[in-house]
Length: 304
Image (cartoon, rainbow, N blue to C red; front, side, top):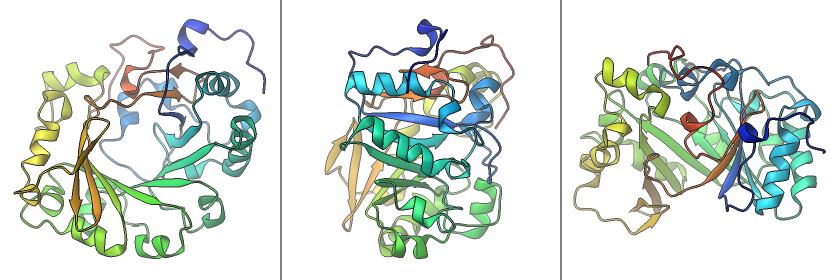
């Protein structure tokens, strides 16, 4: 793959001398869920533009992204999305093959998905090296309110047939607080009993481009940018009397009977990534909201 001609280097290039933990390929377009706190609601339209039916040879910015991955020695690539699920991408297997060829034997491909298509595309699913599954509740009514759909992924079956490690990522807000960290506290034990070995919890994250909107009106929910996101999670009943067993990228990790639970804080994590957006923008900012904005910073931001 050769770099595309005419790319604006100041907008699409990261410092190739920096070390990155991973690279994100962020797909855009319609989704099979309707999460009310989706990061795509807070990004400029071009950063969520549809790329689901674009073959790898035509993906904007991909040659430059690969070039910068190679120059920085970064071998881990995450398939994820700004406004959609990466398993909706038509050429998922083709892109896997391109990246493995370009990045070599040390290439590690990871999938960040809502899991709704995992069983249907199980062969492709198992061609990744790892997976993070976004699931915010194991209770149908709470799941529907947080994911915007009724259909839940068949987590137990998926875990039984998965050939790769699966981690679960859970957003915590007022809808699932009691289930996950409150008095009910059934979420983490159920995850452990299903066979999960790693879970990450985080509060709703409002990107930098949306902070003025939140300050002006807000929605009454706790957000990470108030500086209390992680602290509020740690004040949940399930963490009473517990101490971290270690820290990962600055985030505390707890042991729940052999299952690791990391309490994640986007604003204070020490992770570094290089991100390819659907419109070809490349950003070396870990926070997606800090990517170069093709429009005025006062562009419309959808309310959660």
